Image (cartoon, rainbow, N blue to C red; front, side, top):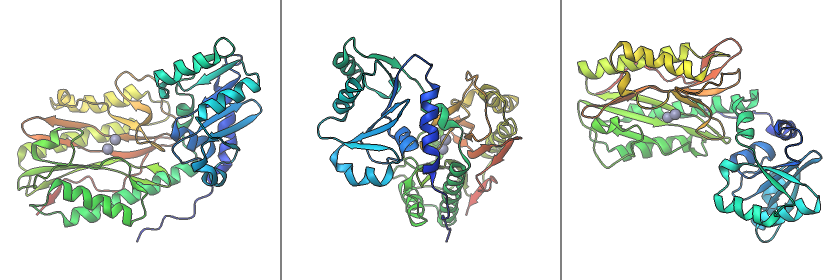
Length: 369
Ligand code: ZN
Ligand code: ZN
């Protein structure tokens, strides 16, 4: 049985993170930062519940939540906690006025239009609302050693679950059954749950990059695509593997080899300073040599951590550069509507000098007897 223990406490990093968020706001632009996106709250103050707002000023941070989380917030948070009855935002607004703050930086991409206009109405001219886009997300993109250790364990757990289930997969099992077995295996290994809804898609359905498992039975001469990940200690893993039921024919083998070559080209391009768009292009170039690039219809990969999709996105127009400590996926795919699809995905770490592939699962084309 895999063991997942012995991690240092993440709380030590949080005061530094909160200070960094405040420092990231242009001086004079806002007198406080307000965070409400749940993964960002977890990152900045440790709270894992479903309702709360964090107010960060130059003098410290206060976390607001409702009475359901009275005990939990006291256990989890390493900053001042205020448990309030009634809407949390109303209590925050009251304190903002009391503290005579004149401008607030808000996570505009995580607030609804109604929330934003409601706050604007509430404050009127007294408090200026400023958009703070991706401030916490940019910080989260570079992982601390402790976070990397957690992701590493989530990756190992996911791979262990996949490998144990793959051994037992037989012709006639349904996609849903295989997905359920994978989720079950992850739970038994200690996962909090799947990182996202497990994708199992056989035959032509493997050409749908985000297929939902169906009641269809897997049959001979089909591709079997599994895209899955584990959530462990709050951190995610992400992996895609494709197997074949029975010996693969020429077409399946050709596509598989091309995707694997592209995936290796993508991994080889990962290093500190590399632009995301250039990493994406390296995999696309590899597929182009085989005339298959037009069937690769999504970006090459994404960051992951507390969420399954995080900054940075490895897409064709993303000019930002990779930094040591970033954890991203590399997942090219080729999808032929009438035949099926192949995607191969690893979770990789950007190191000081290059790249480390965290996913240990073999990328040989597995054949299910
Ligand atoms: Zn995936
Ligand atoms: Zn992915």
